[in-house]
Structures are given as structure tokens and as C-alpha cells.
Amino acid sequence: MEVTELISEIKALFATGCVDRSVTGDCDTVIHDIADGSKFGNVDRYKIPDIYKETARLRQWWANAQDMD
Image (cartoon, rainbow, N blue to C red; front, side):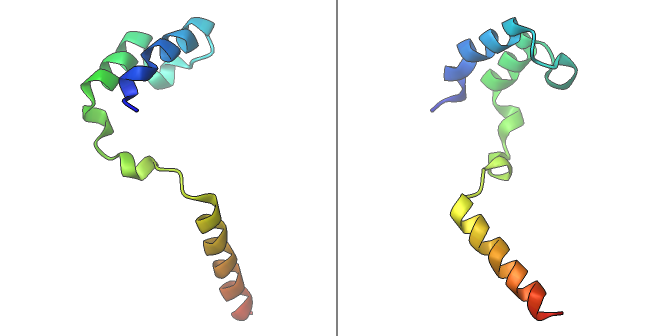
């Protein structure tokens, strides 16, 4: 999915008045940033981890922490 496909939804969100513009900027700025794409060069940083892999990782960490006691 291209991010530009979400522009109508973004406009609708801003229209509700529930968007904190002090964080995001105004609607036109957000849309410009999305269309420009330059601020999204490091998208891997924002990937949501797989819940099963993350749970396994945390369980392993916890097991190792218990062994240290």
C-alpha cells in the first residue's frame, strides 16, 4: 500500500479535531510530508515486531534472568 492512499483518511481525522497539531503539524504539512516521502527513509525502525517472536524473545530473556538468581 502506498502511504498516499491514506490521504482521505488523514483529512477525515484532522476534520474531527482529535489530532494534536502541536505534534503532527497541520493537515497540509502532514500530507506534504507523506507525498514527499523524505521523512520516511528509516521505516524499518518503526516496524511492529511479530507478537509471537517478541513473546518468545521475552520468555527467553525472563528464563535467563531467573537462572542468574
